[in-house]
Length: 173
Image (cartoon, rainbow, N blue to C red; front, side):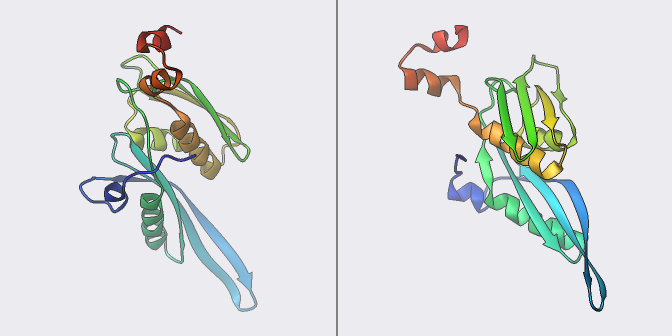
């Protein structure tokens, strides 16, 4: 389902990835000796040029959780097709109870999206897009649904080759 990225990008070589922390959650475990606090961090990384990934890190300290989240996100990078600063077509995706709808937008419209989705779309390098989170607002599921939607996108050239039709026919429908 996910498009794989070559090992050079996964290793982090020659690619400048920017990190964005989407959510930090404090988790409390009650034990016989008292309460134990730990943190989980949801992080999105991307090169703002069509590559994006998400990761979850858990640790006793916030900074350590963020670092682990960044390492996990670098292992889960995916390639996103971008055309003229927007996405090629409309896409609906679901993860858990979160539904996500993303639509291409006119140049200059900007990223019109909520918090968790905005972080993913900006990290991917999409400049103009309309996005709506339907259903659950849980950041973990919204981020997963957004990445599922972005990986489900197909480029018009690929569609034309698959169907063996002209590229102009794909655009005119």
